[in-house]
Image (cartoon, rainbow, N blue to C red; front, side):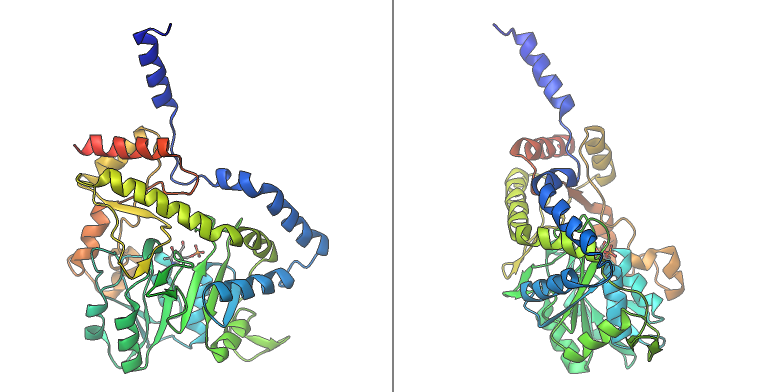
Length: 383
Ligand SMILES: Cc1ncc(COP(=O)(O)O)c(C=O)c1O
């Protein structure tokens, strides 16, 4: 017979033992370990350590997955953006319109090519760039718009493309967090001039190190991207342009080729987890993510809005629940961008989001018990 006290003790032990990391890559690795080791070993045995068939195969498959004609493997998502800007010859004196509510790389790359980032505020429900605000900041210096498909959901691309076509601007989709996500049935990366993916390990399609890819339907741009990822050289040792080493490591390509067939299933599991959380948060103060009717998100992150956010973060972490703030400091308030002249108050929705957002564990291997634990700890704390 188990006494009431024993039962309570069991419950307490269970609760203390429960740990929910923000992401558990070991859980994923355990399911594909043999395949990854075999694929990596194949590259090592071949000693094709730069470029080669694995990179080409991945490029073909990611192009097909994204509904694009061409794909160019590069060394990271950051370099996908950098190479796109360089290949489109965007630089000093040019302006690129983007969102201040993004990972640093989006804006960092614009600055690194010598162009000026020009911000507009976000649409508060999706956290993506507010397309209605873009046209008011277009000038004769504007060369491109860089929407970011944040957290797995695509930005409102139709009005963005309309403005771009009207003013003859390039559109570089920062799709680092949104591979295979859709907007009106169209895949991330396939709507604009170029689409940039990141294979950072925490992405839905993550490598075993850094990696990235640019997709495009523009053959000339594809050729330029290939030249620029190899120090601006088409013929060895003859440099028409100043490029860089943006090459994708074939070991990363091999690992990504193993993972690619699982991507849709993993994203589907994330959507199921999100629906489960959505049900738990309905009618509480926790505001679940909003997904547009015409979009299919891949939930690279499940980001809620909560009151007393910083206290909630501390409470979750004290209970062994991993969570993160994406992003606590908007780009226009970063020290390195002071020279742009923006001040607090310029982008109120972005600034409010930075104070309210909270990313919860959403990875495919989460159990219902783990999701219950996360949701209950958050709801009970916020009251
Ligand atoms: C929105 C966004 N842009 C760009 C990047 C840069 O990608 P990477 O880390 O592969 O350089 C990331 C990834 O962290 C990102 O989330």
